[in-house]
Length: 162
Image (cartoon, rainbow, N blue to C red; front, side, top):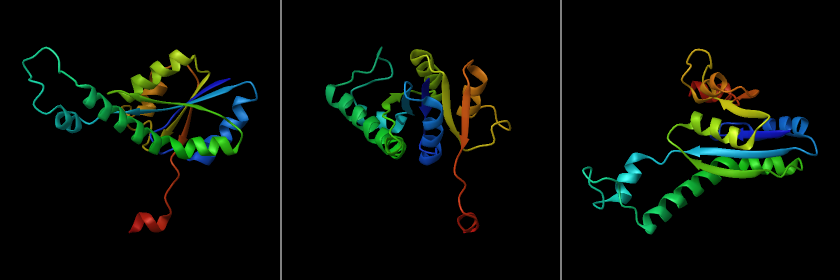
């Protein structure tokens, strides 16, 4: 079985690792991805005066490319490291990919196609059926692959009342 786990940092690492351990088996593979959207304000800041809106394309220097790559890498690690550690504890070595994309749902769907994933694992922070524009709901709606949606771990009641 080929499992694609798409996380934005809300998945409970232990729960997901437990599902992966049961579903993947000895011959299976796990790929963990996170989709990073580089904020426009960040791009404007690093682009500076090099780009004019009337020119055909922005002119990116290798230094600017390196800054964007570093941002994607650092953010990707923060979002995936706890999950990767939980998988390793259960003996599952996963590959990890940080994908840059403006539309997380489309990027996840594309990654699942490229990998020929047998199952897509996602987190959910909203009511899926109340708002069909959430990333999880869009992936559910637009894929023909099985999808396992794991809700975010609820916060303790004490934290909700503060």
